[in-house]
Image (cartoon, rainbow, N blue to C red; front, side, top):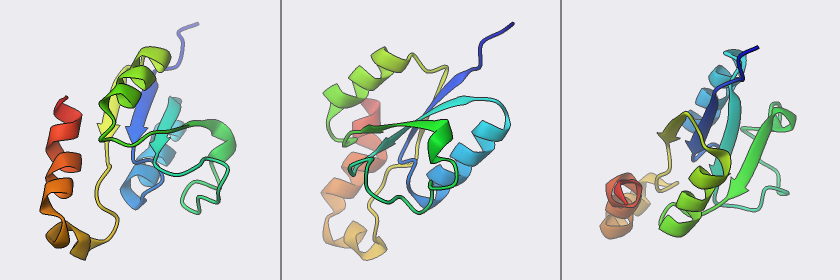
Length: 107
C-alpha cells in the first residue's frame, strides 16, 4: 500500500490555508499545518479537522524553524499562505509584508 503524501501548509489557520487543509485531507493527504500561535489555543478555522492534522508553531520569518519542520516531516508538497493578518497592516509595515510574502519563503 502506497503511503499518503504529506503536505506542509504554512499559514494553515488562516482562511485560505484552512480551505486548502480541508481539500488535502479529502484527497487523502497527511497535513502538517504551520501556525504562528500556540496550537492549544482555539483555532476556529481548523476546529472541525484538528484531530486529523498535525500542528507546528513557527514564524515564517524564522527560517530555522521552517527548515526544521521540512526536515522533520519531509513533505511532498509545501504551500505558503502566511501573510499579515489585517490588510491595513500591509501598508503600515511594508517590510514585514514583503518579508512574509516573498523573502522568508525564498530562504
